[in-house]
Image (cartoon, rainbow, N blue to C red):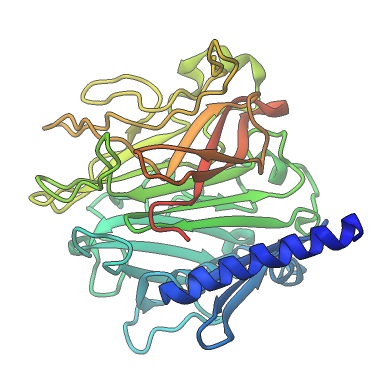
Length: 396
């Protein structure tokens, strides 16, 4: 028997084992295929023998012909994925009447279900995905009491909001964006005369049984250090991996709007230069229904601890094994929480590469989790590399 035939048979046996396992578990499975230019994913129900949903980077590239459609297309597809994976869409464009993502939708309000948050479902994820200013995305994570009757995030008399995942928090400030194709802190969009069609946008969404992570980036600018943004919102875990569901049950948010580092390699030795690159806040606690003010996640300050090292760092053990770190020690002005976040991890950018899948055995779970390396936060793949959970903790 030829080697090629043996390999095909081995692959077929493995495929059948996976299909049988998911069929017996009554859960749909996700299949992913990556070509040299695109990545494709399908959600398959083996019991019914049908495909429930599918998406691919090809869809974004086709919609990306018009620069005004780019961010809008990302927002619409993200909304559809959220609805299919544990979130309820409660309002679009300021209305709760039959909310459905469409080509005319520019604002969304989502509520988590119990499959995403085991504590309660009192928080809201708010998203703007609009064609204005060349196309941009904005996100908020707030308690439902911060949502107005017109389904926007409430602002004070000076126009400031809470729960924002961008650097400033004024409603009408043109620079308050998570990702924007013009007037952006992404260097790839600040090149004079650049045609946005030359810079496709991709994203990665990860939803577990206790939170959500989202990454968006400009393709072909992996070495820039600033052409991507990300956030994670999750219930923390104990040192044994148990999700925290008792006590104040804080909901944490960590985010970066331009990589979390700098486009100047010299800044990789200066924590002060990047102190606001990655920010953290508590969305709410059981007895306080409002987010805390975003504080630096990388520098110690009053009532704030550093939970991520954004600089180049030693990440090799004496056994020549690389070390992956998890954010831990988030606190409010009242309490210090000895918990950690497991939906993201980080390590030195020179230890693993972008898109590298890293199996990690943790919490005595018996099977390895998988984390994938994202972009480095300094130029030329230096500095720190954030990692996204892609398997484990409720992710099939």
